Length: 583
Ligand code: GTP
Ligand code: SPV
Ligand code: MN
Image (cartoon, rainbow, N blue to C red):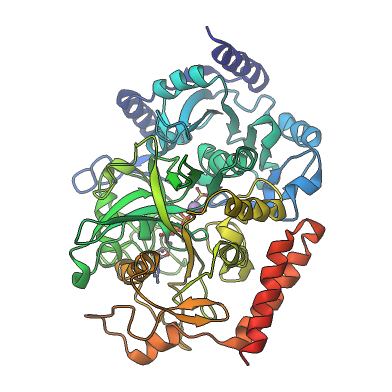
């Protein structure tokens, strides 16, 4: 046995003697194993089969009502010095954090099976990929990891080759929010999560490994681990551009990653690489390339319908695990804005009569393997990833942020990303709809001090002259009556097309203090019912509001003190001066 496998076995033994499971199951990742786990979970009530005639191989899981989203207030980055975690993270010293959770893990798996899940984040043969092992007492986690990652024997072989892996220890514990913690130990490449069985808290390959731990590794090794979807857009001439977009949780990544071109752009093709996370590296030529560490989707269900996203709607009609959706009388899954069927039971399995609020939880999710997506890219397993033409930041903003604008250069683009503000959503526990700073959509996911992270982003400027252009979009502008001004979804391709034309220097733009904006008429709105007045509203800048926005950003930078890179402060001041001069 090689050293990494013996290290793994020792760790498994150590965890077993501390947590006391009834038995230990090493996951092979085979389809048979998946089927057996589903049968077992159906028998013990963890899953219920949905209508197998209309939703073959689809199952419903209802989580504990107190365990329905990420818990940012219980998520910690445990570094020796608090400064290294930064004001953007909750911090605990590694020794205190270990002591706290180890006490909770003691005997936590009694009466349960412990699953050992080797997984590979990224294509099995990619030099950019990284492996991990999750130990969990949740069969739900095991089947989700099977759908979401390259899990099982192939990953174990790669761990043997690599000699290193991220250790993730997870137990659902007693689901008491008072005893729930998601702890990260970047220096040890390890994670300990207890007390939640939900999504980002429990599927440790995703946010815990592929973002918090990976962002820390990426900084040390000169790459980027980002909360970004990746999509290839092929125009009717066969020219493909890959773009990577960072939007906060529940702000449109999955939908954009598998969009359906509108009728007027029907010659275009979409190639989905990823819907949530991108690992970005400079190749030998200085080209930024991306891989998607995941191989499945844990997507927001509400709002998915034939009109908004027929691909997603069809993709989740088979082989899908639904979490916290409602059901119809004939046992089909149901959610708000599905636009077919009626809910008979809500997400807590209560008869639904409309008096108990929403039938599906707003953060109800589907888990499905990426190969179920008809537009999954043929390059998703390419070891070298795809070249990125544009990086796009965005958020959910009723006002201020225009439909699209382009940063003047990389340094300005880092400011654009760092100053993203967005309304909070149901993806995390807490108030919904409040604007908060969410730099690069990484507020909940950056495993180290944001000030150092911005410096890391800025450092790419010195390493290559082939960096992608940086843009900002906002699909969520509203009028005074609360209606969205922009139709969104597939129509977003009209904006992405402008972005690609800018990258190719095929189209001009209006220079403004905040960056480059589309000229009137340059975003093609043919066949859309949208007035020139609304388009002007969507592509205009309100200088007064931007001044306030920029002042708030300066205050926000102050909370990071002296560690803020001078170049970022200089950009902020440059923007302030440009806004002043525009009066
Ligand atoms: P996470 O998985 O939490 O990271 O979310 P995400 O960024 O992948 O967001 P997703 O695509 O799942 O969309 C979240 C919600 O926003 C869903 O209810 C969508 O229906 C809605 N949505 C997505 N794109 C658009 C859009 O272009 N316009 C509008 N109005 N709503 C959108
Ligand atoms: C998000 O919240 O950004 C998600 C869902 O993608 S979770 O897996 O819970 O993090
Ligand atoms: Mn996400």
